[in-house]
Structure formats: C-alpha cells, structure tokens
Image 1 (cartoon, rainbow, N blue to C red):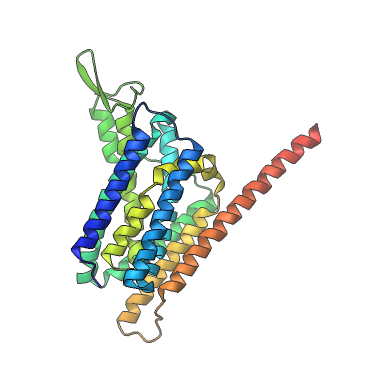
Image 2: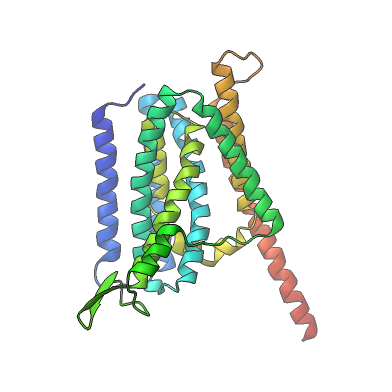
Length: 327
C-alpha cells in the first residue's frame, strides 16, 4: 500500500513544526548547556511521539506496517546511538565548548535528515528497478557487522580521520586560533576567516554521510516502503542532540553496544539475502516475518544495554575495593 501525498505532507509538516518549536525553546537567548532534566524531558517526548505515530499506523494501516515501523525505528535509533560515540570523539578532538555543542549537533542532524532523504529516494527507486541490489545490500551489512566485531576484538579505538574535504578546508581557508562564540566565520583586521566551528560542522556532516551508507541498507532490509523508511529515520534522528547530553558519560559505559549492533546488522543482512532468494522461488529460503525481526532487534538491544551497565557497575566496584583496602 502506497501512502497518499497528503500523508507525506502531514508527517513532514508535523515533524518540521515540532523541530521548529524545539529550536525556538532550546536555542533562544544566549548559548547555554543542556541540563539533564531538560534533555531527559525532550528525549522522552520524542520517543513518545514515535510510539504514538506507530500506534496510529497500526490503526490505519495494520499491524504489519506498524511492526515494520517499530523494527526500523529501533534499528535506526540504535545506529544513531552508535553515531553519538563518533560525535563525542569529534567534540573532544576539536575541544568544542559545551555551551555550543548542541548547535553543532543540530547542524549534524539536519544534514543527516537531508542525506538520508536523498538516499531513501535513490534506494527505493533502485531496488524497484534492480532486484539484485538486495544481495548487494545484504552482503554489505554482513561485511559491516564482521568489521565492527573485528575492530572491537582488536581493541581498535574509533578515530576520526580527516577526509579529503576536511583537509582541503584546513589548507585553503584561513582559520582562527580559537572559537569566536558560535560563529562559523569572523572578520579580523579586515580579513575574513573561518572559525574551528565550521571545521567541526564539516567533520560532523561528512561523518553523517558515512553513517547514512550503513543505516539505509539496514532499514530497507526490514521494509521497502519509502514512507516507513523515511518516518523511522526521521523519528530516530529527532531528539538525538538531547540524547547526546542525557547519556553524557554513559556513552563510554555501553561497551557491548557494538556487539549488539553488529548482530542486528548481520541478522538484517542475512534476512535480506533470504528474502531475495525466497522471492526468486528458492524453496529452502525462509520468509522471516516482521514480528520475528522486531523481537530479535528489540531483545538484542535490551540485552546488550543491560549487560553493558552490569559490567560498568562491576568494574566500578572492583576499582573501589582495592582503594578501600589500602585505607
């Protein structure tokens, strides 16, 4: 079932309205830090908004479409949390003042929305015309899953390597020594110069492009409905900057999240290949219903999150015990 044009207009218009209210409330006045209470309230609001949308979808389009949305939303939200690890590294590397970090995140999220919208349109058209791309997407996701585990086992820290665009900007544009508020450019002695804020935004934007390459094949492995793909991505990205401040130091404690994401991406990759074989008439290839996908994805994230928090608590206890014994 293809959603009518008015449904797209209502959803996109509603999301833009909510985002505008968010920006007006949070960004008015002088730059300031997010409080934990403020961040928690916004994150809860956006999650509740996604749940309400899923329920409406259940009533209007049935449980299958709703299940596809929730499975896609959880997957994209999980990948978005993984994005926050890299955002945290970028913020630390460029020493972005905490009061201005939410502006950088805002630009990053808006860029991610635009990029994913473009990839969704291209992906939907390509999959409709070239069915063999399901095998390519499936293989790519399996490769990504294996690569995540390999890096984690080797203990390779996530790094932000300067890409060609970032190096060109650094080499070409005169840059100030430090930040000048939240400005991206400033005139000094009659000469226009960019600030490190622009460099950070370019780093965030180029990183968003790489994450879109992972997230779009993953969601297309759960549904080929462009409306579901777009809304799952949009709701997952909304409130992401507040989630960044809410998690704070907790990001470093979610040590098993990478394994959970790798398992989810691997599962979706296998599902894509199996679905493609099933559609081609291969008798032994099973059709995996959406409720199975939703159960596996949801339980994986719960298990890895709980396991990460338990390990963090045990590590804290071990570090405290020797100190108490010395006393």
